[in-house]
Length: 238
Image 1 (cartoon, rainbow, N blue to C red):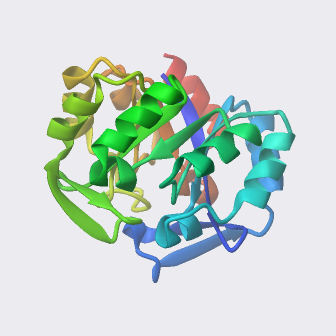
Image 2 (cartoon, rainbow, N blue to C red):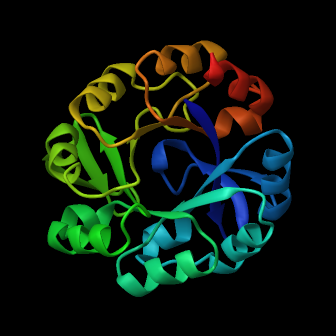
């Protein structure tokens, strides 16, 4: 398992939303490029970026900042937030993003999602954001009747790069991830699974690693200082 630090972008700054709620925002750093450089210096190979403005508006917004981070050439970057059409996907890949994350549109239009997965084989990540067992969409503001495991099983037939599973109730809360559902998802699909939401301690990382997900995304705990990225990377190797 490897560790992916996260940068959530809103108005060009690094922020964090508590449980995905836009009115519960914590501001961390004005310069996301500097933050990306620090993550690289601390040993990260990957960077997870969420365009929060894009997720809310349904189209990528912070592409200038994302392009500047990609131009560093220091990290493999995955980006999500507001990806609803092929042109947006292609643009992000063209500016140096390694893989893109699609959530809402995948749930709304699975046929289109399948076409994109085939067209950009190995570059598309399914973002499964869940509130309980149900999938959440539109920047976590709406719920879908579909369950995580049902949808994941269907999507796993596609040539995806990975499936990122986020329990919204855990995200930004620093109370530990949803181990039970992460384990169930890893066991249910052959596609690499990335765990996200709530990772707060070295013990969390070690416990997640027992389930053999591909990676774990860490955000707020790095900014708050409860976890050091260097320590998290080492723990994930064990």
